[in-house]
Every structure is written in structure tokens, then in C-alpha cells.
Image (cartoon, rainbow, N blue to C red; front, top):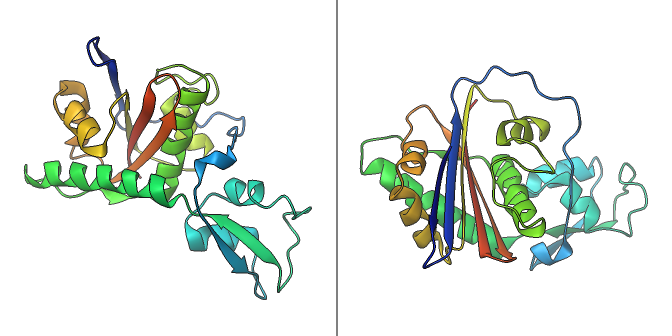
Length: 221
């Protein structure tokens, strides 16, 4: 693991990679913690015949647990009926920031003749939970007290991979600043430019002692 601390700007970076992982998934379910302040807009969806909250979550590319948490009026998440109203958190502001990180990463890859990484929205969801966890529990590490290693976390959120990596950072105020910081650090740059990876997820969380928390996760299915 590579760790860098710049005391003058209080910016922290760390990178880790596991190539061709073969460890079995751990048995405990991923822990979900949710804060309503994490989304700034919602869409009101009218349930149609055949809908489930799971299908609605896929339609909007939002986690099922987030939809359940945003709809306390639904007493039994397994039972929804045509005409019911479901409020879907969109995370529009956060997702715009995350998408900008992905765009900048793919520019760096294109400049070196590498294929772009495909955005995996479910992996971004995992990365977002990691950034929120670092902020809320006041730590900075690849090892989460809530979710374990990034490799355990990815698997426990239901994603499989043959290779995986993670970059984390804290303190950078913008997508451009954090990508530049990662590119200036060998370990992080190697993750970003790794030709093994084919998919990326990015998670951003604001607040906490560092102000801004960033997680990049890379996988090859």
C-alpha cells in the first residue's frame, strides 16, 4: 500500500490493488448505513403493475436500501401496489462530481493509448459507501471498520471480480484536483492506468474532518 501525506495542504492519498483475486467471499452481509442528507433531490415514481422496489432501483440505478430508507411510509418493502408513490433519491450533485472523476480518468488513459474504463453504477455505490464511512467514522484507510478490506466490501455488495484495486483520497476540493493528485503518485497512477481493469466506480462524500472524501474502485469481472 502506498500512503502519502502532504502536511501543508492536509491532503491524504492511499492505493491498493489485488490482481486476479481468488479469495472466497466472506459470509457476513454488507452493512448498510444511510444518511438522508446524502441526496439533494428525489423523483416521485408511480408504481405500475409488476413493479417491485428492486426493479425500480435498477431503473434508476440507485441502491435498493437507499430507496427503502427514503420511503418510511412503505411498511413492507416486499408489498407495493399500482398507484403507490415511491420517492427515489437521485444523488444528482454527487453523481455529477463522480462522473467528472471518471471522465478525467479516461482522458488520462486515452492519452496513453489505453481503453476507457466503463462506469459500473453498482461499483460507484460501493465506493460512495466507503467514502461516507471514512467521513462518518473519522478514519482514512483501505481497511474499513465497517466493511473490511475493499475486496471483501466489493464482494459483500454482490459484485464479483477477477482483479480489483482501490484508490482513496481526502482533502481535495474538486474532481480535477483529486485526479491530478492520484496521477502525481506512482501507486495511484498505476491503478488508474492498469490495462487489466475494465470497469470503474467512484464515490464522493463531503463533510467530516477533511471536508472531502474520495474513493475509486477498479475491477475486471
